[in-house]
Image (cartoon, rainbow, N blue to C red; front, side, top):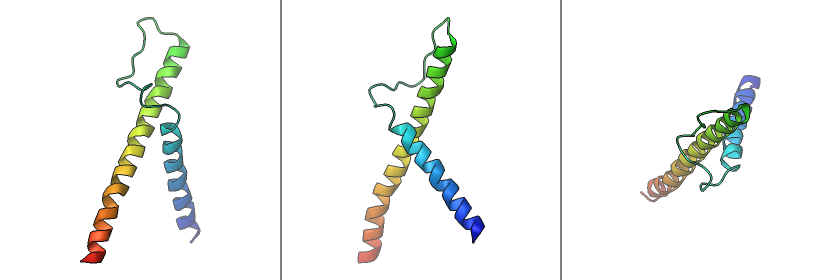
Amino acid sequence: MRKTLIRGAAAFAIALGAFAFAGTASADELTAPVVVPSHPTGADYVNAWNESGALAGAGAAGLVSSAWAGAIPSIVQGALG
């Protein structure tokens, strides 16, 4: 019982983190691939890392929302026969 609870909590925390990263930047601010200047500073690397995380979070959030949007019609169709 305790292992199941810990695994569920870990999965929830990972999903929550992905949604948090997706909410930090708007779609207008994100560009892929992330561009680093030709003479980067430490701050440029940090910004590139943060933008990459935001892109990954936005992709994960999009995947989850697409799966959820596709699941609802499937559930309804299955329930109605």
